[in-house]
Image (cartoon, rainbow, N blue to C red; front, side, top):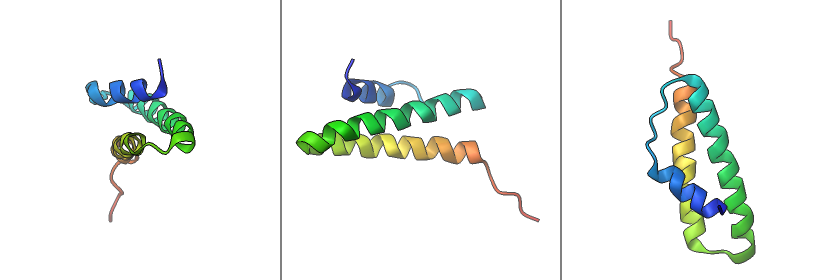
Length: 74
């Protein structure tokens, strides 16, 4: 399966991760998908690939924000 197809499938599936290990796995998966799509983008400069990478980046940022949690304030 191509990286583009995997990226689209990742966006379509439910993004509810129950525990920390699932969030870590999802974050790593999204990161590798973004890097794979970026390699394809470098060769043909298709705007659809850039849009897909942007959507995946937003998802990755949400997952990482949830992993880091809220800062402790005193």
